[in-house]
Length: 45
Image 1 (cartoon, rainbow, N blue to C red):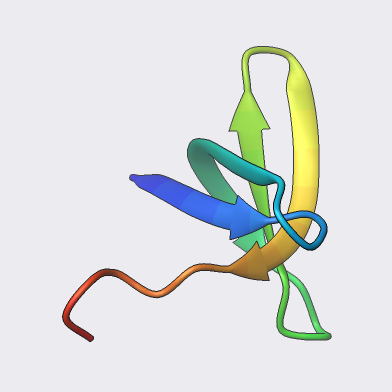
Image 2 (image 1 turned 45 degrees about the vertical axis):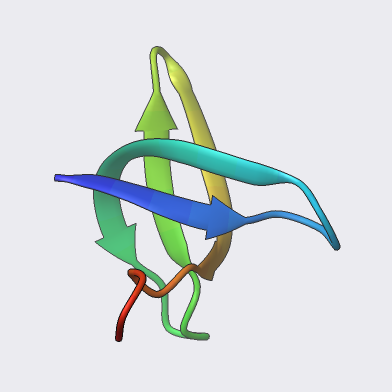
């Protein structure tokens, strides 16, 4: 499942969901790289 995360004040990354972290952030995979950030809520939620 594709998920979007916020890395900084205006940097977003979209990738395949890997796992939820204990602090509420999530991890996504883009190719071979892993990114951790705050999840972005879907529009209309």
